[in-house]
Length: 155
Image 1 (cartoon, one colour):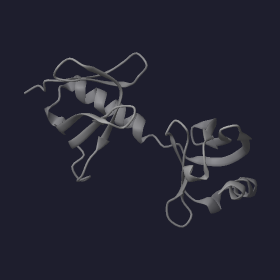
Image 2: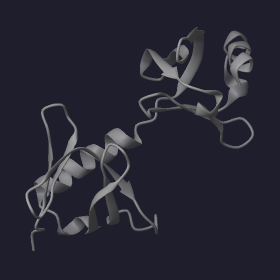
Image 3: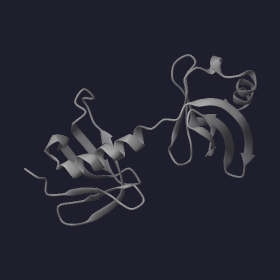
């Protein structure tokens, strides 16, 4: 049985949800609900401001194209670059600019406050930039000395 809604990827690579009444919701993000042991079930579709615009009880009931669109959106959401070194941190008018080298190459991102850096256990950190991209530092002690010094000034 095909659902009464549609999921697709737009030209910008973002998930679009078209509800039962034909309303088009752009830049939708999927979020797995509980239990996490059922990754194909209970998926919330959330708009850009976090409001729920749709719900999928079981992804296995989706068409092949819809499943592909959902998988693509999850792959983008679950992407977490790993920080290998912190090359520079500088003040900006609205936060701090970080220049880092990740497992995917060099990048620059902005964080707004120190609350954008969250500890995950003894030596793990996750940094959330102003676009909600998460960057992982799996072990602070494995960063080079200069990277650790830069990090200590802001965390």
